[in-house]
Length: 481
Image (cartoon, rainbow, N blue to C red; front, side, top):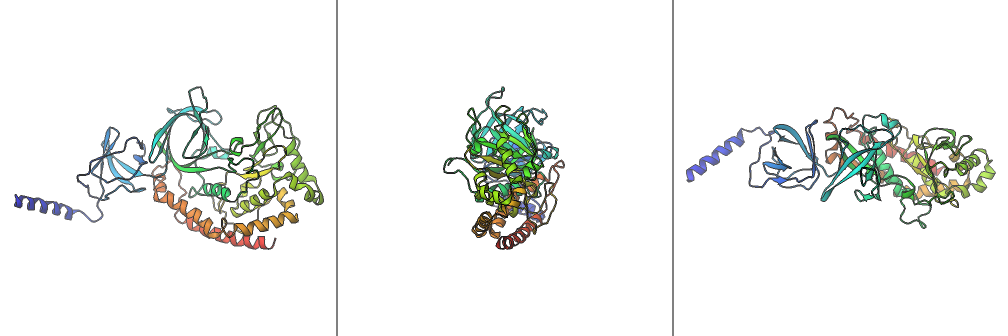
């Protein structure tokens, strides 16, 4: 018996010795095969399996629903972000574990439309939580971004096929029925818009927080990985919307109260460079799109028209005397600093939300769609500009106002030591970059030839250098303002 055991041992050692050092070895041990339950999605087109769940000890096989994977690796435990070669249904697949939530959308092959929501099914996988499944209505979102190869979506949770809305909290975000899936297509590292929204929440002072402590002055969101009809679509963020509910604006009640407008296209009104006539029978005016109220019969452009009229046509003396009654000066200072620290050329009027809490409150600004920032434009192309300032007709006049200049300088000196310090800005990018890279997101996106690739590992270095150069320019600019 002893001689047989020695012979068997020598045979195993001979096999192992014959393997090259860079070969993977099929581990045969006594660890029972792990059952992944339902925490995975299979993309048969790209031969990809993505698992969202806890790590576990690796054996030779893994149960995948009713199928069995054969896995070849020397790893003792399943690593996040690492691609494992597995055999699935007799074919070779790449198997990954991700810490990002997985959003699987199924429209039964129906084409997602521009303006009309079609019915679909959502399956949301989050580590340690039972999968969430629900009916949805889904359509494309965005303007120019609708032409991108990687689409973004507007998604509504439905209670039934008739489109009755259902409110749920997804990924610990707000309890609501309306959601955004942003494809981040034109961003080299899929980071800029994501980081900018977080940065605004850090520095944007809420004008009426005392009155509405539960309102959010911006949006929260989470990175996720999306599948559409069984095909991997890459990294997205699932996010909240800027709307009346998010801001808790006072509702219309027989008369106008809270107001919210989005800068949707370039025109004189959104940049405060000229005054155009309006009609309340149209949902758009001079670059603005009405968001609340938006129903004809409730919509009234009069107040916003009066604001633009005052900015464009008042002399500096009258402007200085009255502007603080019309716009929130703290918010104006925050937005001016923010727009310039990120250098978002598309956010001087377009991609700005203009709103107010009620008819007795001043107007405020909120940023949106900040993909063209931190050294790139809206197409994702480099615009390595760090020494120019962004403005518009309103800010041109505000910068001649002594009280506003003092507010801006004071606010900059406060923020530059903490939220807007070089170290903090770089840390926000570096930590999010490491999260996506360590989870293998960039490698997975490269598996699909239909997903255009912007990824370059040198890009994070470019961002870090850009941040330092931009900060130093702004510090000098505000010092001498």
